[in-house]
Length: 118
Image 1 (cartoon, helix red, strand yellow):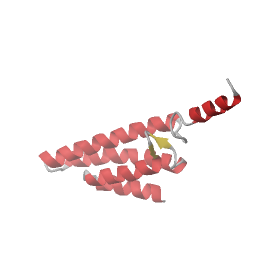
Image 2 (spheres, rainbow, N blue to C red; image 1 turned 45 degrees about the vertical axis):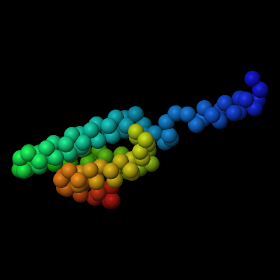
Image 3 (cartoon, helix red, strand yellow; image 1 turned 90 degrees about the horizontal axis):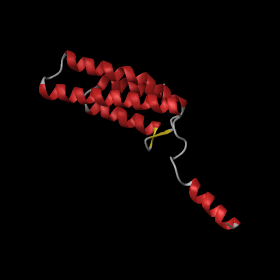
């Protein structure tokens, strides 16, 4: 194979694969776990508000979501530019805060905003 073809192949292959900088394995796992838990808590909160109005069950969902805020904030502070599932950690934090507010879990949303602001 000629030198030009090797260079072309190297350039093409460099464009393949995940967008750098990917979140390292342990942080990616923690992001996955945290975001999944927050998503579940929001789903429960939406059901609770739709069918029963709130109360203790809504407070439980808020606690479950709030428990994952420190992990998300810590990873954000480690490197907000890491990529996880095609989004930067900074984008995921904004999306998560918005999602929490939209599903009625305002306290965890406020805590997340405060945790990444400080």
